[in-house]
Image (cartoon, rainbow, N blue to C red):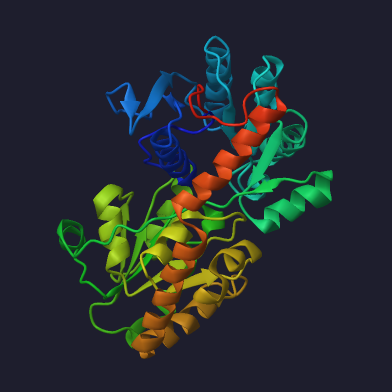
Length: 379
């Protein structure tokens, strides 16, 4: 598996996907190699949850980090024959030609439409759009994570893709050290988790709490969990506007993350970027009452198990929905239960692994290999 920071997951949904998918493939009898960025993955072992780790360097630069590491990884794996190569991120599309020329089946998960993100300047956006096009030429299969992105690739490039969403699995935890450290009480905060970049719109939650003001119950806070390496100005703006009801602790991973997810009154998912978002799925899996930005991909994920607000109206409309759920705890509980049921039915990691395993088997079979990965070199 190539193209992410690697595992153990400690940054984004792609890393979580690689960790959960690789672990389950190992459990099913496959041998799996995960390529990791040596400056990011500090896990000392040569394996993690059964997957072999290959740690390689890269150029620590916003624009070159991913593509340089993916290129080095693909050159490395050419010497170590694999039955299947699973790549991630549309920007890596050009590099998919390397394992393909070596006769290995290649699938590429393109994620959302990354060129729409505000963090990229014009030349970078144009490169990503070029890479999207090359992603339709070099891999043997393209994976999209939502029907919205699937329709984009069909409309834009005439390419049918394989739609496989992300998975989620809750880890319920009682109030503990993390809530105590942040000065929080169970059931008395609204949670946001995500990268603090403009297109994820965490400012909507800051603005909503400012709009609610004296209407907020005593002790009710907003907790904005996350950071971003290249968005210092945006984060500084959030901190400057945050009042004493808004807590910005930076990144929180592992049990601390699940402790926060397990004890929130509600969850504000403000992202306006396309694609299936792992943070949204995990908030739903934890049984949170989720209020999400009403873009098509969020609505596709949440269905009727999530409340929505108009992202164009921003904090004002989010405040209106928060006002509803604060006034009606039974409503919040109903939507929390619906959300957990929807994830269990549609987004379990076992179901997602089934879909990837079936894709890999088809690609291997069509490349003149056995129709199963069991006993092979893995992904």
